[in-house]
Image (tube, rainbow, N blue to C red; front, side):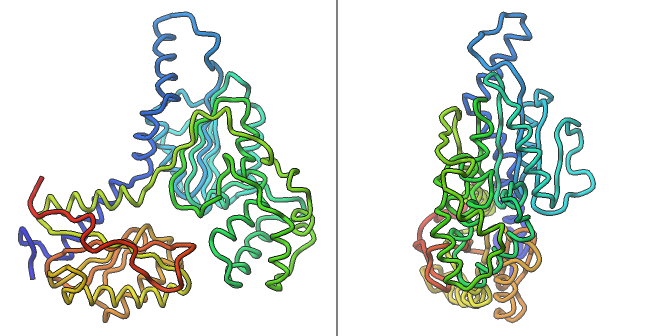
Length: 406
């Protein structure tokens, strides 16, 4: 059955996926966010004055511009920053938690080191560059989800393999995402303000791409109590290597970020990609004459069970429940975490429960049920505080677009 314009639901969905990914592109979002900051505006004015031969204001930073891009979307965010600053970037580190493609940065300055799946090496490079910064230098920090698996300074006697094993066991013991993030932060010398402390006294600008659990921040948060973490780990019966025990029993004030403020920061901004992606999809739906609504669902616990719940949501929407009367739906989930990840498991479970009719795109977004008119975008997020299972957290009529272009 064809929808508006003669297109099928699958064709509409594919167009919405493309529009959503374009609107949520981390590089474009980073460039747009940077363009409006005093950090960039002051830098541009300073460069213009230098080009005109005007004397430099001695109160303004005049040294190096150093880039630190860490996390899953570090390559895209670095690309966006380079589009703003061009060859003004003097040096830096770009690090991702997984493997890098063969040539992720055409034209990247040779002074910017690139790391893939080498968090300890990346962390050492970050610390070395940060320590060398002075009061007249600038540091641009671009953070995206999983930054702590991309660059880390683990405690002596406990490498990243030990931390990964401990994190997996904590997850198996039922620890929430935020609790596990607190454990990782305690055991990473770049977290909890550790990176900001190393960057001082340079002028700091930070952009954080939404996605990590609350509290995961190298630019300034409280250091989790090592004593409380050790008590909880032992209560869960998790084995603790000597290096982990020593790190947890060290005074909280000994953490590199403890007691350090980010008062030298120009500003730490958070970019919400999910909102941008949904807005892009809805704008495309509106242009296509689709009467499209947004439902937001949160889940925690077993992703397979949540996927089956999502399939029930799809059937209910297809039957005209929840105030949506058209006979089909599209189910879109937030950025998936790759083959074998939790959102992948959720999508595949939903697809199987829908009788194999679901379209699964593991590297992007989404599920579609049926071939009639597309009418709903359903966003699924993992929520740390949500009750186990799947729950609706928005009204079916909210964020509704009227049909018709423009």
